Length: 564
Ligand code: ARG
Figure 1 (cartoon, rainbow, N blue to C red):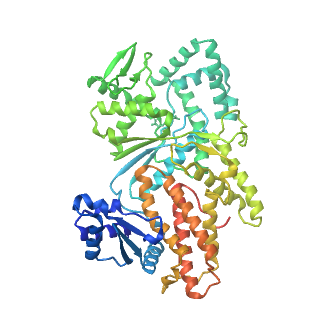
Figure 2 (cartoon, helix red, strand yellow; figure 1 turned 45 degrees about the vertical axis):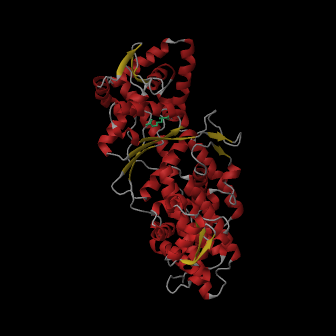
Figure 3 (cartoon, rainbow, N blue to C red; figure 1 turned 90 degrees about the vertical axis):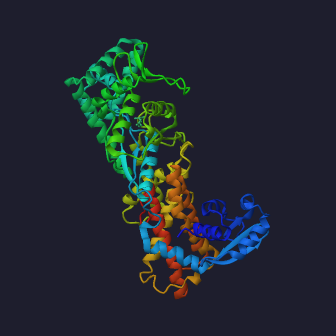
């Protein structure tokens, strides 16, 4: 039950003002003595043309208070509502305990499809920490939207096409070897790619050679495509190892190469619609009116571009999935790229251009020197995740040396810590990697939330007799219990909010708040050693917290071990 909405409806009935308007004005007072909710009547002064205290008094007289409200108090222009604690605790805990891992989920998105374009690393280049953010945020949004009933399509728009493959082919032919690529994988591809750039500075004709190879690829040249496919397979194998560790899956691996044979009709359409112009031998769409540089569609050597493929992909996705929204997760340095080609779709006359949403995020900065940089200056995702696991294992060895499955738990906690850290702030904020901070079991971290979950599991293991039947909710009137209930009640709203704002941190932070409130509750209230009725009521809080923490972590793509 959405209590705020229920209250808004009651106030609407008593005042004649629309419930939606009232809903927006209802407050949660900072001072609990002013009630659990308060309605400031001056918000209605304009519509009702009366002095606010008078409005408060009149509404007060007409109001039929809902069952979950114990007391209504009029103070000047304010109407303060005090909840009936038993009723409230019962309502919240019963919903969580009966709906279990479906608590907070909804059907609001039924029949609607969201395409989420995330991770999308570049073939033959390492999966670096920058792609971590796209992967982690994209996966969280996927889980969050799915929980709200949307059909989600996770697309990995791999960077597997473009002139860089021409460069790679030239580099391989000149400085590479089959053995080295087979042995070292992406590292070796990276090495020869870097070498290409060094050499091309001295010998610019290498660039022309590379462009030629890419044109060959576009034209289906067998040698070029065989090499490309080989580089592709090697890269995918490495990416999949990282996805396995992160527990991330995709519905489609349709990368840029997928659109190779689909671009020509799109270019034709641009031409027909009079949008394409020649400029210094290249084909562009001008965006002068929008105050943006032109969107480059075809290079003067005939090569297509990143934007050409994005435009083609959007048309393909609209046709294939008929999406309500298509969202793109990349770092904010691609803002202009997306703004440009979204505008091209607009100019093509597709009104669904407004359903294309670029969701940018800030950079990852590394806490200097603390991360292994075995491979030169690029920090690889895989190394980073292994290091997270190793660091976590050290902590577990110290805290809980007898824990069974230490390796498994370290994996869940270490990787969970990395994900949690990434999702802790608004997307746009840069993420700082500091093992000390993100692995702190007492900080606002993944391990802290997981530890709280494990603690609730261990309490419940000692109370196998727990049942909901005959539960006396009046035993939960203390402030610590109420605080936990309030946070549990707010959880469904947080999921919706996170989806609407495309901000998983709203869930992340709420899990920290629940954990903190629960740890205070646990500290203030003996559970297992209290008298039977109190014990049973408090156990209900434990079950509810355990349920919501596990569910919330799952929404973020994090596992919840029962012991740690
Ligand atoms: N491969 C790109 C990169 O690593 C990201 C692709 C994002 N998705 C898209 N449809 N443009 O920067």
